[in-house]
Length: 190
Image 1 (cartoon, helix red, strand yellow):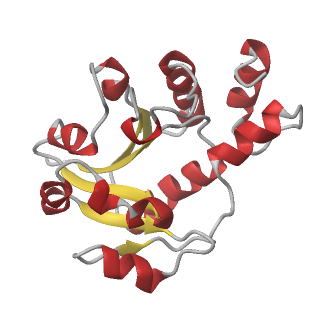
Image 2: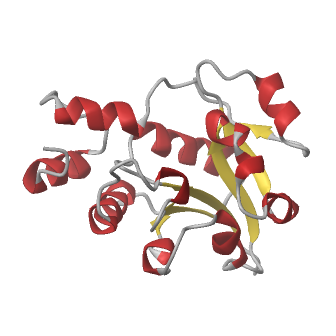
């Protein structure tokens, strides 16, 4: 039986509530069987931005999806040598019907991705609204139909969550409880 799989990738430094809400919205709205959360091993567009170790990002992703039966964490990009390209990940799921789940801000940059045209031939797109990014702007940038996720635009980014943690502010409830505990215990952003 062919699986209808949502793919939600990213740096996940840390994976936060907006990621989970987008995954949930896509699961319900697109009729997905599963949503795979895939942290980038070597995020090539953030190579110089002080990204946390792949081990920490993997563990936080794994903890984020615990106890949600249709969410799975997949470490294929963490295990892959070299830069993480979405096209390589998507091709690893050959045979599945694929829905790529993106924030509107990320969708604007798809044309800068490796083999972006091939990627768009393989996947359907489910896009989460983001504050300050208009639908028309995204639809103009992406040369194929987009499924807009029915969710509130959330003004939350991993960059902001990390900055809060580095300032000693609480990130509890910005991330799942197990992730918050992991960050505390391991001093991930200290």
